[in-house]
Amino acid sequence: MSELPIVGAAMTLDYYEIHRDLMRELPRDLEIQDFFSADLLEGDWQSAAERAKQLLDGHEGRIGIHGPFWGFTIASQDPDIRAVVQKRFMQGLDVCETIGANQMVIHSPYTTWDYNNLDNYAEARAQLVERCHETLRDVVKRAEDIGCVLVIENIEDKDPHARVELCRSFDSDSVRVSIDTGHAFYAHGSTGAPPVDYYVHAAGNLLNHIHLQDADGYADRHWSLGEGTICWKSVFAALGLLDSNPRLIIEIRDKSNIPDSIAWLQAQGLAR
Image 1: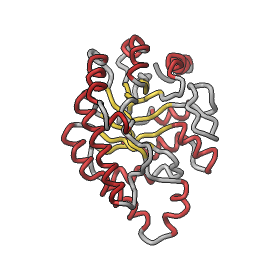
Image 2 (image 1 turned 45 degrees about the vertical axis):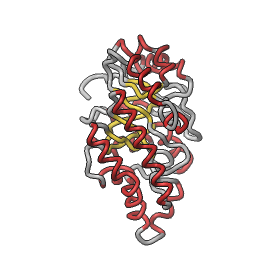
Image 3 (image 1 turned 90 degrees about the vertical axis):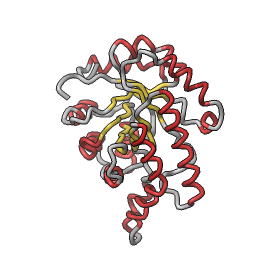
Image 4 (image 1 turned 120 degrees about the horizontal axis):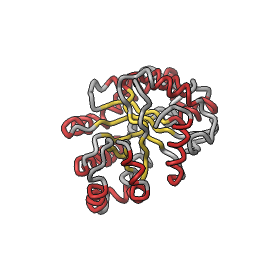
């Protein structure tokens, strides 16, 4: 990045109405967080999508959604569960196609248990990757067809490289890496993972999306930026080495504090 990056934010459509002026003062990237609900995807998601299209008319930043994630893993051993996961992601891609979103966040399958045990069983690491392919093969093809990118977000990931290798294994421009700074900092503080900037270095130019949230290294806080103890200068220094132009998405619990987080980054000389 040759100049200070522009940060975007994750929010529901209700909050987009509140932060509309802020999100349009610069071409801020947006992640819509209404459509990960199975209840909505199984119900009248079309009405919510039509509302999104109306609200976002004229929005200049890139638009994505957070895909469904509750209650499943993309590496399930159960083929019936994998079928449900495929269905949910296809529904998410229906939303993306309808509203013009070209990115969908999905969750990493790697757990803390995996870190200690995948190499304890013959072929376990390769088998996990194959199960992810069985789950996502048709989903990735659909994403390619509609020009959407699936970004795989770290959750419990202790090894920042495993998810990157999983992404690379698809050999598709429609599968890329996402980092959540708070999740990485939890893994660093509570499970002995590397610091957050190491996750950025590990992803390199496969990084397409990052959730910016502050935390204390103990839990998934989703605090406003500046309220926790993440070393943001090291994170943005690592981001500054990339050419992939990842979406920098503020994802905090109290959405009313999004303007404060942007102002804090500006005051630190890290972003605008």
